[in-house]
Amino acid sequence: MSEADWHATRPGEVEGGDPARADASVAFIGRIRTPFATRAECPHRGRVDGPDCHIDIDAPWRPALRGIAAGDRLEVLYWMHLARRDLLVQVPKGRGAMGTFALRSPNRPNPIATSIVDVVAVDEAGVTVRGLDCVDGTPLVDLKPARAA
Amino acid sequence: MSEADWHATRPGEVEGGDPARADASVAFIGRIRTPFATRAECPHRGRVDGPDCHIDIDAPWRPALRGIAAGDRLEVLYWMHLARRDLLVQVPKGRGAMGTFALRSPNRPNPIATSIVDVVAVDEAGVTVRGLDCVDGTPLVDLKPARAA
Image: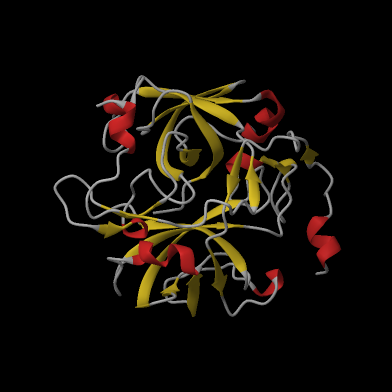
């Protein structure tokens, strides 16, 4: 599937929102390195038995890693930089039309994903984790301990 | 506790990061109405048997609610507009120093919280939910279905 196909609007989809709204700024605090070079290669959902991925933390924020250890379960927030922000109703393949807030699609007004991962190892520049499904080079927004189940 | 006290840096805490970094913009797509007028009144953690809160969706994004119904479990992302963004190591009350990425503290480089809520009711302007712990007026960033447990 080409980049153009990813961005095509399907019959039944509704565009809208307010693209002029920029109320706050996000800092990209690192990058996520995965084996998935393109969106076509990304699994539909991350699995904790999936491949190792490395979360590179940019130098200014590395002191914030203190206390994270192998075996921890983290919540990862990242910015889906390839997504559309103007789709309000979407038609996922093989399903009917659904509002964006009723879907976990990458296309959303603020394209921020949340994933739960297991920490495999910690090094001075970041963490190795399992459970991600995003494309290589995805910008990192936040890391925090997963909620207790 | 005064606003000044909320923002004081405690012994052992480390400030840093890169406040100049603004790599992407977030649109505030609504506001969260809670019974908690100040941070001192907020519970430490939201509970699904807590009070009803209303998530007001701004008009341009309301079509994205299609398909959400009472009984759904949603993940809510919101912007903790009162938080500090420069704390890398924090000393929570009664605990030792911990990196920000090892804490769910509101103070973090990108102050985005995630909460799981139960939908009580849906109306044309938003959703009534239980499970939030944020201050009244908190800006909304995203709504999506909670992951399957």
